[in-house]
Length: 335
Image (cartoon, rainbow, N blue to C red; front, side, top):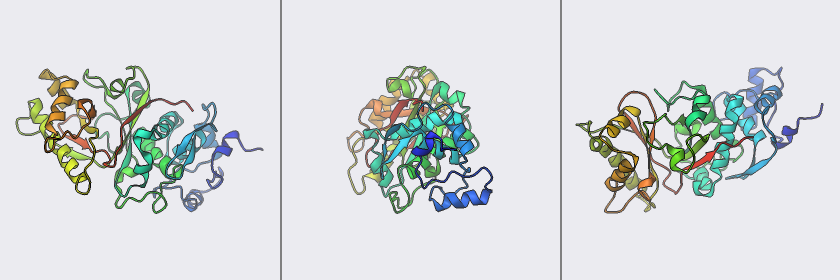
């Protein structure tokens, strides 16, 4: 039987494992091809790959070339990475969209993929799309326990590794790296009436969208004493943002960049209960984060709260890679 059409879009050195192959045999073949992240991989059999691509119109269409080694981004190659990461077929459009979003010039993937810094790709899934996939936007949404969150995040990292070629010593030059490089994906929450990330980027509320961020890490932030006021909630966030700016500026003077933090719904509702809308939050933090009189965000709109998470008052500052990057939000790409 001739190879299926999608086989030509998968590099020859990527093994398609026989359905009868044993688990250890499959792991050995994948490891020999350098396709893994150190964790066990789902064997990419022809049956699994065909199921992943069952709804794809053109698996071989090239959507761009991914740095640092500029491999071709096709639905077939992305499906291979999604399969070995443990994704379900319904996850493929999200992983493909993330791959395409990474190629936008303002994201600066070449710098991110080859830096000695610790940037990781974070994928944020929005609105009804996240709900349809059963993603976690509640308790422990940045942690383990949800297949869609975990496998989509892992697949995006494997795309960068396997299609882009960002592997240790041959592209990825991170001095330390970080755990988020195994996979970093979560869903934006339903919100509290503020415009969500896609609407701020010009999309309609009903559009199916994802965003990609280059995140240098996460820092837990708690409200100050007297946490009932918006200022008490937001001032510690400003402290964390200023500190990250100063650390990034130890050897260089970074340009103003987007300032991202996760705000759990409980605190977002408290802030809104005082009459503060999103614009006021952004303006407050834009001014509160000045360092030596200089703004560290490009504008108030460059302060990006993401409302998600479970009950509680723990926030998270997500400092973006200091070498220069922008958040990219894209409508869902159909394979």
